[in-house]
Length: 326
Image (cartoon, rainbow, N blue to C red):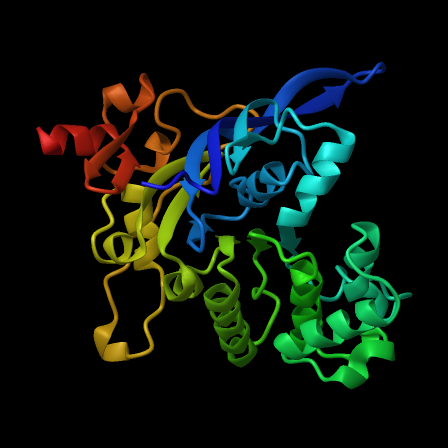
């Protein structure tokens, strides 16, 4: 078996909460708390969960846009955390990000040609006529007319701006792209076009994606495997068809039951969830989902469940599942 393209091991990110006259760090927000996974070449790993569960923070940690508090990150077996200055800058050509908001992620003072071509200049990949030709080719590849080259972002719709953001991410021909909710700000009809564009680009360029979203329908369409995140931890991970047909963690079942179906006759019974998401500053002991879980038992409030493979390629962290399996 080939080595994974991206591998994360026990990643953590704690943000200090400062208080008092001298701004001392009295508490910590556990945004990402011991996450491990891998992404293969040309694979899409979907990452889903409620707002505030740590999805975007995790994506930025993988690119070292945010420094982790602990853990390991490997890209093609290279230790990303150990890289310094120039070595890290060279590595950034291989890893890019596409942001959620196409309106704020593009510099309004720069033309489209300058925005897309900026990476080519920074990494000394092309200049002059060659640079312009490459930018025009990138715009054509993502479905933006060449006339956009000398125009500014405010002249385009949200969908066109996101295509420009995708062209910018492709400029250095990366092997891995973090897609941070790239379609959530777009109309549904435009979402479908952008998702198909991602799939076409992946087929042609063999790109691997970490596709972050809170919309489970979108992730089902694009992901090969899906990881479900709750309060800084991954609670279930499986191949997309397996997770959608047979979710085994109580939290995943609740998420999937809330997804609307297009045909009213097929409407599923919704599973209601009690309580609010606990604070990441003081998460509950044991299983963090136990205060809201109908299967919660004494052990759930005392011992954190292990992340175990219950079926081939299907992992979850739940004491209730462990008892069921026995």
